Image (cartoon, rainbow over all chains, first blue to last red; front, side, top):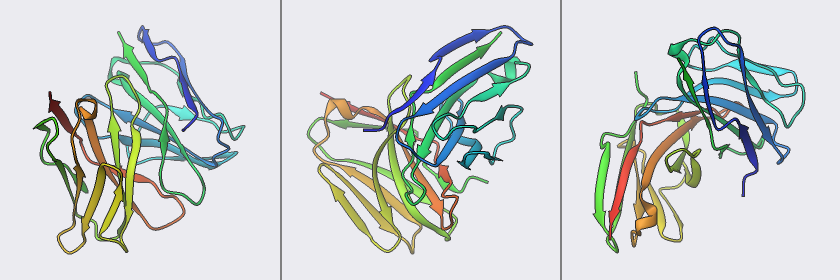
Length: 112
Length: 113
């Protein structure tokens, strides 16, 4: 069973606020990912990491930033939230040599 | 351009019958395919996968079929149970170390008791 955690699960915040979405995994996976999903749509990769101090942007352009200082931790930050950032954000991880990604429960972000 | 397509946004099936979920892809370089199940307000859960060197993979009630010439894969669930009601996503990945996944838009399966 995958052990990957995301906090908060739900967040409602005003425009212009800085927010950090937390993601942690206890499986020792090197690779971690952030996806964005709107209702009824596919998941879009916005950031990924191969390991500590490695981060790359995904297919979907995002104003968010990520960091990977520790293997188990991959936080996502929005410096100034806007209503267009309202979405569900899903974090995932996988073993270096594997292909199956294991997802956290997601954070549903609403920016008013 | 959507490289992975799930053309049926919803499917209803009677309990005990077979559910067949379909997925088409356009990129012939994809070499690994996965199915995920997602309940509302939860993250996707990995179900089953298949490598492009195979045409079938079975795990309990779940079987995935791959037709490379048609660039088509399907997930069969038999017998279907009410607890299977969820959104099902297919995903595909390219060879290489990144192993990034490209997802379809999902199919909402409803299993009627």
